[in-house]
Length: 513
Image: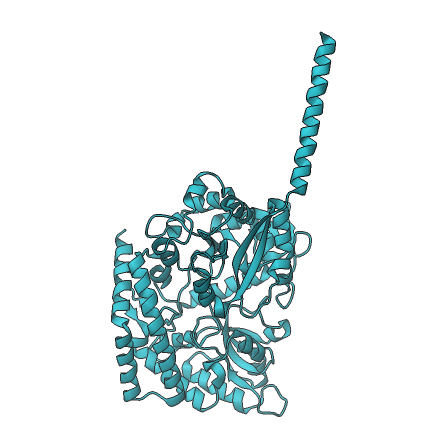
């Protein structure tokens, strides 16, 4: 009997060993699941997504191989529209932006994700989203969740900050300007007094792009008390929604910009140049003032960045400066199309990137290299490579990230460049130069129906074309009674009243909920 039992145990052991060997061989020998994605890429940073070290690590952990089709920011909207032709869609769309109401609610081209969350297929992401109380922001008008969010909760209260060349101020013994008039005089000195000391009149007093709130001239309207953002709507303290380009301060700012343009104080190329050309000019060291996200770990060379200091927004007589206020808003992270060939594998691949260490590595680089894990369990940046070199190994903001404030503080010690940005935000908050009600409540937080979303997108496209064309005309040709009338007429014809009314309804509804 003992022999029989021993023989039976021996056979079971052999079977287990054989089974284990077979399983290991199958795992090792299995070909990875093959998926393809449309991947957003920053305009001024080249990322080799298909050969990035980070995604090789995620593939090893998940058994999922992803082929990336990367698309630059300037081409993103058109390429997304092209890719969303039924039958030719990628498995996933990553980062950038995506019209969830259009592609998810109306056209049913995106897969609802909440059933898979309930099944536990996105454990890292789901636990964090539910704990944050931000599920409502992720829910579309039909009650489904079609996207994974991107969130770095770090208290950023505005996008672009103003920077002035302190080395030029020191060379010319000039004070830091506080009013529009003082700034104008400072720019004239930058133009005329050879602050770089090379004996050549090659200084660019003020450098901007056109239509955004980071490097764009939209930020300058804050000097006249107008928080001009890329959606053109602002909320007054009494809850009234107004269309910023119809406010008197819009023409007042344009009149001042025309003065700068005539006197060659504003780079004339602001009309057409993108962020790449803008950065190249700033990196020559011949720029007096600009607007940007921060100085460190950006497109600016470190030796150039050192020449600049934060400038509190100047103001005109009788008015306070007023910049658009940012808030922690969930951006688009990822979505699965209905052409997806393996939903489970896709979610496994995505959720691996939300595991704490993987996620922090995606932003900050390898542990033991640029990132370290401290004794208290939190991760800390050791150093930040220059010239965006991190993008040679990790996707940084082109990757997946979801870190609500409490969770983020528990796992991460902010890097020096993030502390830099936080300091600028604190300085602007203390100076009282931010709009009282964030426009993001209107444009991002307040829920909207699919019809409202479609109409806002259509109207914004028309209105943006008018605003930018007329702004260029006003700055280059000057502000007259006739040009002001044309601006108003064209904005009315493009639907600014309907656009504002929709946002007013959204905001009123949001405040009642």
